[in-house]
Length: 221
View (spheres, rainbow, N blue to C red):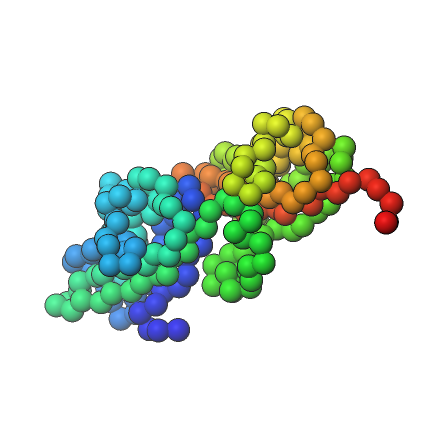
């Protein structure tokens, strides 16, 4: 990893987050700047909340709230944080991958890269036979969620109101999904259930997902 590459950030459309980095041999910064780049285009003012703007605390550079001003569309981005200290200027960057809530585009992805550098959003695959209904509980150890939402997608089509009832609930580090299949029997096919949790600090929103395989009740032919 490059000395100036601070890491990898995974976001889904609608997610938001701050990042920070502690810089060695620095007591404090006198100026901080930030740039969120999409290719050669600076999109900071489009997607990042500038109030508060990027800042510092001692030797720690802290970004603004990425994705808070507007939802960041799926794509590849890079966030640069630059700090001035003792007449010197130093820059660090994070690669940012923003994913859509579309299972057809996520199927077959290797999540090991994300789990090593940030987090893996894929929870598990589970099977429902036509007529089955089930809720699931996501536990994110150490988290404290204030609110959460869930959506059952087939490709990019939202099927939540067709097949799910109840509501998404939170309790500390746990998020409980809708009752999937509770409103109507889910036809045979592949679906993805996305859980999006808002942390109690109101500064972070993260997304995870289940792959749901609905099967018909039939004998082997």
